[in-house]
Length: 439
Image (cartoon, rainbow, N blue to C red; front, side, top):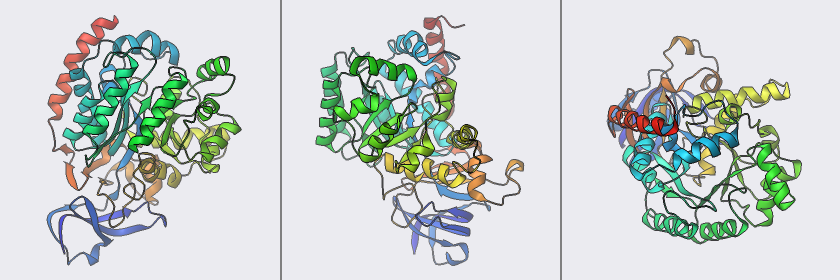
């Protein structure tokens, strides 16, 4: 059998329905997909152009960052230690008003570097000038779902809302056949989007078979606003407008009632948990065990670098597992397998890649990372899944394959110049800091 890439000598975490782990396994990639996987001793029949030695490390699906604002790498550390609404209205929105497409591209490319280096192979983005984010994802080799943020007021990119829908429509047309970049329809939130906007967004997503993305129930403040304006919770409001559906990713979902959780489950909405951002902005802790218990597909995201302040999904997994144990006073809640599933298989499902990615199985897309476990902090290793959640770091990822292409080898990104990407954002930071009054 001929293959393009053969990964040998590793512990294979398939993350498939059976939870199969191969202690001495190998994976072969041909074209964009996984062509074979099995025991290392059985791969002698495979002739590969490129062989990667996992050196006893972990071979696993790439991580899926299911919610971020990639270009906010430009604002990393700009306005820390502030409440959500103060942070958003007094600092982030004013800074974003000065954005350009070039700034967004440079920030997004830096984000792609950070994500690749820390094990993410896919991400879902909501921001401004999203054509630039799509281009950065394409140039970096990453898989992405991206969408232009829509809200009631004028945008620094497209101006009035009608042009925002036109911009989204143009992106949907431009990327309709792209193998790695998919366009979503993305209203910002119930408190910044009128019901008519939500209805039109849902109609557009249905017409194009596109994902829907929205921030929902992120804080008590948001819930209070919607209660005062519409007499119900944000989730109930989205249900009344007909916005809840199986193509929807609802980001944050921090402040939920039992009825909210039932509505999310009944409508097969995918919830995205962003624990570190929610902690930093003191928004609260999403009731993830209750969501999972109700049958909601919960994925994991980092949010943007202005509220996290990094894009390391390994750190996000560690936080997600631990905060719920502390809240429930139950150490068995959010076990390692559950959290790792959220960051891989569930993330792929949320992005609309069910049965295509998120697990290592023959015929699935070859989005694969190799984690170097030959490290003091990863020695010894009794349970590989637990190690990936509680002990591993993004910096332990040594190789990354996305869509069958070797994107990072021995921690060197092969698709673009990372040093140049960092230099570009350092240049941008000077003008951003000057404009914000930061020193």
